[in-house]
Image (tube, rainbow, N blue to C red):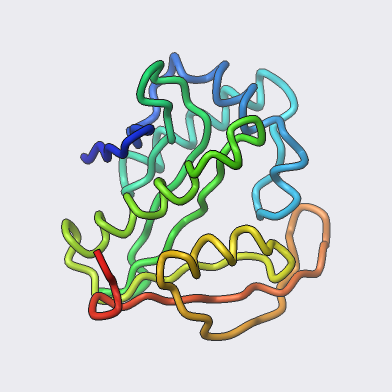
Length: 176
């Protein structure tokens, strides 16, 4: 479908041979999952099942593995989905802990913004994060997203009660 390039990253479809790297770098990290809704994947069997679901999902939606450009190693995932005509939302952006603090989250979100506004013709891009995930909130605000609202939620896997903050960016507000 699409491959997105940034100065340091390539956002591309998953491949079965990515299993070990994405499992090691991302899926098994319980710390990463604390500020997200997904469940850590602890066994190889569960990782294989998750890869099957990922491949099926990526066949239907603009969703990607975030890979280092130099090595093509998957260090995260990201994607978007259309909530309603012209309104797109990120479907989760996650960068492996060992690769955080290098600007990869910003490069990933900027690539998704170009996809939404330039390629998919979106008029609004929605970004959501846990209220206490201050780094995620700072990331979207740094790219022009504006706070809209907060709503309580409960994470299904463990009953954790959280507040989800919603930010939006319009095509008109996008600085390119």
